[in-house]
Image 1 (tube, rainbow, N blue to C red):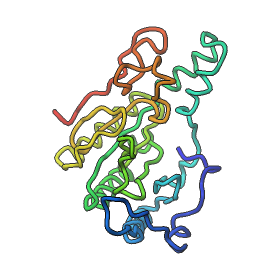
Image 2 (image 1 turned 60 degrees about the vertical axis):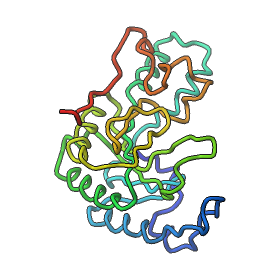
Image 3 (image 1 turned 120 degrees about the horizontal axis):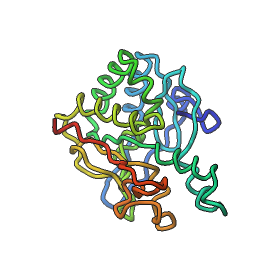
Image 4 (image 1 turned 30 degrees about the horizontal axis):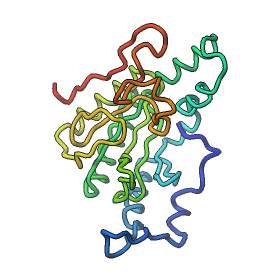
Length: 242
């Protein structure tokens, strides 16, 4: 879900403002102007009555009736710094954190609009999918996904509702729609690969550094099975192989 207090400006306003071009890097001869692709994404969103917002380097798409929600992933830092990790309140936070998943698509530039149209078409016709997720986003500058330290950021991010069951349904839907669509074959940080296009992760990549390593499995894709106390299987099934 989108927290309205973090919204910087609507995409329509952003596109009308002077566009800031990406800095020229050593391996690029000229900067990139993203106006054309942003407008294409916005046009697609408007066709489906989807709100498009510019948030923290991503274009975020959200249905207009789904503007509320929580930011459970960001509670890990507060939980980590808390004095009592065994209280009932702390256990509730553990459960909220464990319920948060993200589905990532590492799409090629030319496939973003077709994927967007296909997914939105399914979203508006699938009531279960509408309940299973609130919003998704596309990275605004799609050629800047690898940071200097090698960290890979996703191109498209789908946010399921806070449950493993919802995440599995969103993943199954994406696999059914796009399992034969080739992607960049680049794995985002701390993600499980499904296909060259589709990946997923439990939790938030911003909170998977060494400070919080004790809560995750070694590859930091999932929380440890005993994160909530009793052992649980947090892995999602790969329906792309079915």
